[in-house]
Length: 89
Image (cartoon, rainbow, N blue to C red):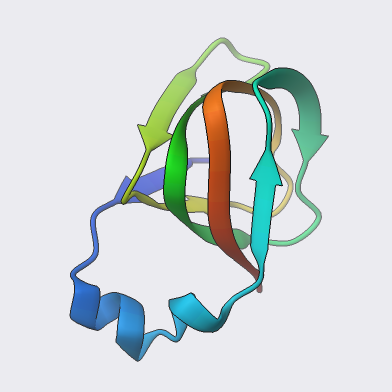
């Protein structure tokens, strides 16, 4: 299960309706999480590293569009407070 991190143009963000998605915020912290559905999110602020049980790490931050696949279990390491638009598929 791969976490996808990409850059989208402002027009892509508008076309997908991302600015209308709900917002989630989290302080600097570390916590376990698992995904029962695919999540897409656009990072407005912050810096995060995701660790997977097999030892892989994926880092992302401001202006990144991130997709977490359904079935993924991971640990979130929030290094700088994060604010994101999110959508479950």
